[in-house]
Length: 256
Image (cartoon, rainbow, N blue to C red; front, side):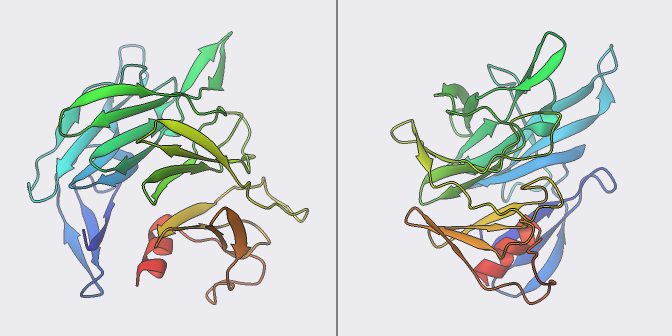
């Protein structure tokens, strides 16, 4: 809970790294997961991973599943039953986010007339009762969004509205798990100096009730506080006009 845990992918399955915010040091961890980590989240006291298994279905499709690991239980991962609406036609586009012992799943797709399209389905799994529920759908359909918890709400932004297009929406939505309602938040500011699809490479971090967005081309990091976006100082380690940063490093930079 005072560490940042990063699970590695298929190159070294079963391994990971943890950075202690108290000692300011990295240490190796072996939590015994099997498969390629597509997405991961923390839902106190659980780590949850969306894994691509090292096997295929009879028709050659990749197999994805959700697994959970309770901190302190060395090497013990537990399968999470499939969600009621499934993980979609391409689970690699799914985003997961944990909040108060519940993992939320968003960004599934479905096939219509041989075309893969986004859905607005939100599903939630309670890691204590081990029960799924279907949440109210998000107002906008998207895949591969950023999703993170800020002040007890889930913020969703920078999702792709077309599976075949890397351009991302600048719309921002927040989901309140207590009232089970969605609200539209202030959209992310855009500019006209794009040489790559807008939002490509973006990442976000939450800290002290604030949402910070990194990685927009020709933009400093942006901070969302009290419904308004404002620029932060340019990161000194990067050239002018860019703020590319991994989500893990962004979180560390804010927390330290």
